[in-house]
Length: 287
Image (cartoon, rainbow, N blue to C red; front, side, top):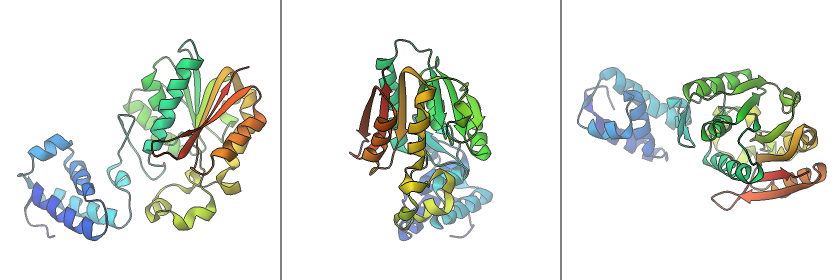
């Protein structure tokens, strides 16, 4: 494709063709054009016959080639939807996944049954983009939400999202439970790194090359952080209390075992995601 004048639909046709040849999703062309023109899908459809400015056409072409080269579209557009809201993302944070939306959904569901009020202290450990913490706060405004991360760069992204989405959240920098050890908590949620180094060979190259490894990989076959959470959280929890973590689909028994071993008087449950895979472990503390 050259930089001669092109209408929107012609640029999209070119993108679809080259993306298909590269075995990429053709819908990416639409997302990248929306990004370049700064329009939603409805306005993109209305603009199909419009000419694309030369600078925008060049930007669009470069974005398509960047994606074909392996860059996730979310890092190009700096945008991902999560729980019905728009989040800024860059290479300092993981791209929020639909499976993590289920952790938010089931946590809220369990909280309504477990607590008779909304004045609840919630901690999100390893917040990344802030998707979990911000979604919890937006879904239940009375929650007192604290979000932590070991990465200052990730916290900067989370703070940016909290400001944009008008979510009043406290942010603390530090590793695992260290930043929240000063008080007791009603709910602690986490989507920690849980991929074993041995799984690198079967992972998508775009994930390996672009998403932050500190947020992906963990020692002890991906289980070390769950073990540490299970060991450290009981002393920090109120009763009743709720712990919820996202897991790898083969980790359910091991992670549930950690919590059964270290948390007394608790109901521990492995919950499947929308695809029928083990994806969450919930630990309800009753006494």
